[in-house]
Structure formats: C-alpha cells, structure tokens
Amino acid sequence: MASTGEDEIFERLSQKADPAGHKRREDELNARRYAQDQKAQQRLAELINDNTTLPVTISSVHVLHAKRTRRSFLERVVNPILSANRNEEYTLEEALKEVSGAVDKLNRFGIFKFPISVYIDRPDPTNPSSAATDINVYLSALERGTYTIKTGTEAGSSEADAYVNAEFRNLFGGAETLNAHASLGTRTRSAYSLAIDTPILSNPDFKFQLNGFASSTLKSWASHEEVLKGGNSILTYLTKTGHKHTFGYSGIWRQVTGLTETASPTIRGDAGDSFKSSLTHTWINDKRDYPLLPSRGYVMKTVSELAGVRPLGGDVAFFKTQAESQIALPFGDTGITFTAGLRGGLLYPLALGGSKTPTHSRISDRFQLGGPTDVRGFRLSGLGPHDGHDAVGGDVFAAGGASLLFPVPRVGKETPLRLQAFINGGRLLALHGAGNDASVKENMKKTVSSLTNGLPSCAAGFGLVYAHPIARFEINFSLPLVARQGEGIRKGLSFGVGVEFL
Image: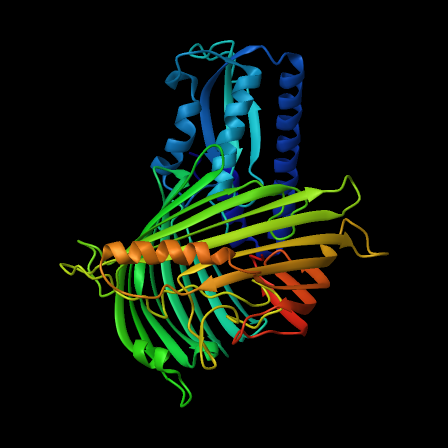
C-alpha cells in the first residue's frame, strides 16, 4: 500500500513557504503525473499487444491513494491474484482478467471514485531478485469523501414528504457505511432510521447490516395510524450467477392507534399494541437490462417470513410468503416492449407458544392490493375485503398485469420516456374461520381455490411513463372493467411513483 510520496511532501512544504507560487507548482506536479500516467498506459498497451499468451508473474500489487482504508482489508482483495499464492502460472490474458476482477470488487465497495485506474509495469531488470516474467500492478484508487448529506422533497400518488439523509463511508477503514435518515410527510408522518453495514471478509457480495427505525404512518384507507419501533439484522449474499439471498431477523413493536370516529369494528378489534419477532428470507434473480423500464429480461422474487413460533416469541404467529415474476420482450429494434407480471401470496396462521389454536391475522400483517403502482384503476388498497369504508386486507392474493410500451413520437426510443397501454387485475381474499390446525389447513385450501371463482377485479388504460434513475413515474388514465361490491375503483387520471410496478 502506498504511503505519502515525495511529491506530496514537496507540495505541502512549498505551499507553506510560498502560497502565491503554490498554484504554479501544483500545475507542474499535475503535468508531471499526467506524463507518468501516459507513459504507463503506453507501456501497458505495448505489453498487451505483444502477446496475450506470454507467461507472466504478478510479483506485487500496489493500491495507491487509499489512505483511510485498512491494509488488511485491501490485502484480502489483492493477495489472491499474486502469483506467489497460486499453483499455476498466468498468461498475460489471464493475469489481466484477474486484475480486472479485483478492480471490480474495489469499485463495488462504493468507497472509491469511479473508475479505478490500472497500471502495469515491469520491475527494474537490474534487480537480481526479479524474474523476466515479473510484472508489478498499480491500482489508483482515489477515495470518495467521508460523508454525503442530502435533503429534498418527494411527491407520490398519495404522499408528499421532506427528508434529510446522511451517509458516512469507510468508517473504520473496511468499507463500513453508516446511514441516517429522517423524513416528515403527509402520509408517513415521520420516519427515522439508523443503519450500519459492513462487507464480510472484504467481499462486496457478502454483507451484514444492523438497522434501527421508528415511523408513524397514516393509513387513511383503514381509519388508523400505525406506529412502528424496532430493529433488524440482515445478512446479504450475492452469488456468482446473480442470485441475491437476504436472511434477516426483526423485532418490531407495532401500535394501531389514532382511530377515526368512523373506524370499523375490524380496525377497532386490532387496535392497540403487538410485538412481532420474525425470521425472513428474500431471494431475487433479476436479469432485466434496466429494472425501472426493462426492454428485455426477466425477474423472479420470493419473500418468506416466519413469526411467533418458539423460540422467537412475540404475540403474533404466522408463516407468510409471496412470489412475483416479470418478463420483458422487445419487438426487434423498434423500442416497443411487451411486459407481463404475476404476483401471489398467502398468510398462514400459526399457534402461539403452547397454544393449539392458531391466531387470527392482524391488519398490520395482512396483504393489501390496489393502487397506482399495483393494480391500476383501483384506489390505494381498494381491492379485497372491506368493513364499511375500511380496507382490512386479506390473507391470500393473486394479481397480474400486461403492458405494451411505445416510444413517444418525435422523442425517440433512446429516451426513458414511453407511452403505455395496460390491463391488470387481481383478487384478495380473507381466510375465514378458526379452530385447530386441521381446520385452518382446510380453510386455506378452500380460500386458495376461491381465487379462480369468477373474473378477477380488473382495469385497463393507457398513460405516460418516465424512468428517472431513482424512480419510475406514471400518469395513467384507467377504466375499471370488473369490480366487486365494496371495492374502491378509480376511474380517470392517476399518478404513481415507485421502483416496482405490476
């Protein structure tokens, strides 16, 4: 690892001695460094063009400018590519591929400025300890700033908020990141979180995170406010084939409070406190070229949660799982894309502690369906069981949709702006009845089979889509085609913003 060089010492001393002439000397140093870089790049090009099958030995790897990063952290990344730690010889092509893999790892830690420059040189031929095949590798890894603070406002289909977000990078020299977030809004009245994550064994694909949070959200579609306080621990692993697995434990105190005068008996029955202690697993295999506006590829995702069983504790017990998929198919090189997606899930009640009677699901755990980023043409949580005006959620759901996206005339297919025509729909059902495990199992089978009884609630429409780098925006005109009694339809214009759309 490189230490402070003579040029930097000279630069600091000259600045103190002659501030007026510091700019001239700085320009001279930059010109000298540029010339050195150009020579190194030229030598690298000559070496590569000479013979890619040339046997080489990587004798050393130097990571330059990484002053705040621990040496031991960097060694875990670069040591495996040293020839002394391998059983076989490199060809030049193989050596460059291994160096490129190490650079890719360093880039993905998010603590270095992109891109990281690579220089390759031969050692001094007069040095008796060097061999004719030896090469030295230099990685110019300029570190990013120690922190970033962002403030702003956001507006969605049913919410607007102001936020401040602070990120502190490379806290202890091992790519640790501390993220603090606070926001105030119209629906999510307040949200605060503090999270720290760190890569394990200098592997950007293997991370651990601890997170604490508190929030207060107005659930206007269900006549109450939900207060959450708790934390979770998360272990994330990305396989070489692109499959992402997330394992986590969460302990969350939930409070259903702030009931309106018109709150239904179902909401009043769920009011008060509950504590959820659960294990979760998420699997994602995303092969789309651009997730916010894919033109080709597919994604598959499952989320499973087990709560309340021994030894987890808590006062709610269930197994909850959901799955979703999406495929995008291009029509040649026209910019026209067909996308289709499916989602489904169920919540299976379990018995708490030594009880033999499964517990009823609560409003905080049940599925909600409908809205501008979900099943368009329906109000937020407009599908499924209702008690009066309150959407009380369901235990089993299925939903699907298809869209045809076109380039906007005179704008071009290269822009992230599209016209779309869509049709989507779904069903959300409650699991009725209580009793022992056998009766719950039978009721669940009947509920799942009921999803195909009759047409799903559905809507069709057209609109305008814009894929911003941080979110997708949609303005749609929707026409509900099928709706069940009590469900909240939304005919006409609607606005949606999010990162996941049906």
